[in-house]
Length: 227
Image (cartoon, rainbow, N blue to C red; front, side):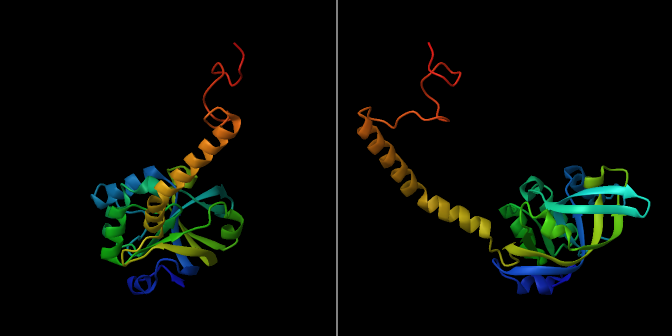
């Protein structure tokens, strides 16, 4: 699909879809960057580049200044939940139609995404070799006074991904679905674990599971059983 993503294209996607990305994206991994973007929305300074309708991703990078210009040597997703306090205002204020990283965003962010027609794209964690080969060109760098991985970097990419639509513009979230399934199974899982412990304890005559490395209990607090 072509990026930056339009609201119309975003609304065509559903949670669970997979996408390969061609075009222009903006990346950053910085909490200070997000705080500064909110300051821009408050009128305290100008945006360093046009971000209206952009596709903004939580992608960390190893970057450097070189004779030929700013180089991005690799990309890797960072955890998006760190940015939950910032994203609702940024999604609404910048009319973003695609955001992403890894780990998803919260329900407040999902509400903002539903309003603007925005999807959350989940990148493969640890997939920097696959992701980095999609970089074609560094088009623009914003806030060069910040650390390199905090700067806003507009990239031209081809075949970036595949990425998964983790949260769609219609209110569906794979992360919320996974949490709900885990909650539904919690009591059954804990019951099975307790039954296994009791069975193991009965087999040893102790009435409880035997001590194993990594479990607390017994010993002198140093990891051994000396007195």
